[in-house]
Amino acid sequence: MRKGQSQAVLQASAGPFDERSESGRTVIFRGSVRDLRQSWYRQAERTVGELRRCMVRNRVEIDKKKNDIQLLFESSNLQRLQEWVEEMLKFSAAVAGGELSGDIPSPENPLCENLIELQAQLKHIIWQAKQVAAGDYSQEIKGLGEFAEVFNTIIGQMRERDSQLTQEQEEIKKQIETVHNYNELLLELTRKQNEWILVVDAESREIVYCNKRKEGQEEAEDPEFCDICEHRLPFRNKLIKWDEEDQDNRWEISDGAHRYYRITTFPLEWQNRRANAHILKDITDEKLRTSSLKDKAYHDALTGIYNRIYFEEYMEKTLRDKERIVLGYLDLDCLKNINDKYGHAAGDNYIRLFVHTIQKNFRNTDVFARVGGDEFCLILKTTEKEVVLEKLQTAMDEFRSYTDKKNVHGFSYGVVEVRGEEETRTLKEIIDTADAAMYECKRNNKEIYKKWREEDRI
Image (cartoon, rainbow, N blue to C red):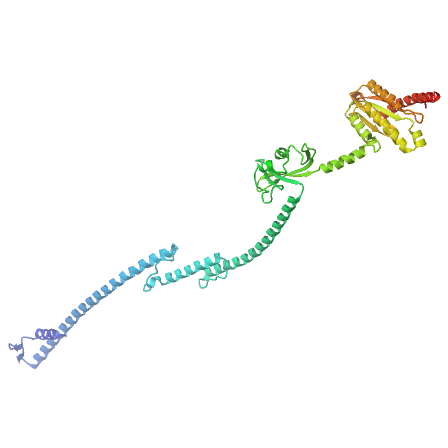
């Protein structure tokens, strides 16, 4: 208790029994001991009460001061807390939005400690993801529980898949290299082939590939190139206009200059578009060889005229086509005698002279064939039988004029008409009819030859 407060308590406790001097001190106390004791008791009670009241007042004042100080302290912390919360909300929003490169909250803010750690982990995860994207599958996340487990599992699967893809890529690379080598070989072979290989776009009708173009320009789409190409084909337009529905896939054509080509054509897909491929082979030599062989097969080696094979094929076709013709059946007389007396060389000359005589008296378009050793046939179209008989008689007279003392020159013949649509006989029956007429002529010739001998003409 302060000094002033103590004096006030003492003054307040002074009773009526006290006499005080001007200085305030008690000088006389009047009364009994009992009264004095009671007075002191009362004075003590009053003093104690006053002390209690003073203590209460002091405690209230202290509590008020304490509350004021606490309120002041709490007001400062709330402001700081509010600042921390705002900083945490701003930082968490940035992290949630993926902004990880912004300012980091103050280290004094306890609310952001976990967020700062989360930001650092996210930044590291992003870096690891970039490494994985670049092909580094050695990355591994630790300390993030289930997320880390899932992430590491995915990385492991990607690592395994990458290994498989690498192996597949190597296999594909080898296959591409093999295909490339095959293509180079194929292109080199096609360049060196005598055949033309043309690929024509089915829609635009442009030549999109030609193996006769200069190396490296095979696929150049230059329509004017073919106009100046030394290998150009005069029937190029027929190749360009070829239609799968209207034409055969294998056909032959001539360039009009005695060269022949066999063309094999087939549709295909060329660089994602429909096209037609034409492979052209020059078969001129083959044609000539075939023609030569056919000539040998169809022609008589001694005389050069047609042989029996050609005659029979020609007659079968004539009968199938129901054509009207005149058939002459000729037999060369006296051939056996010449062969026996002078040899086969003389006999061959005799045959050639006979053929020459017949050819002089008939057209080139008339078919003349040797069908046996001394047997021949003539086939004439658009000619009457009487005309043929006259021509044969003229030829007979000419051939007989070569008769001399050594040999008789002559031949026998029979002529028959083939009536086209009205004809019902077979080839054998027609020949038999002509043969019978020929033998009638031969009997007449024998009488003539006999008369010549009697006249000593032979």
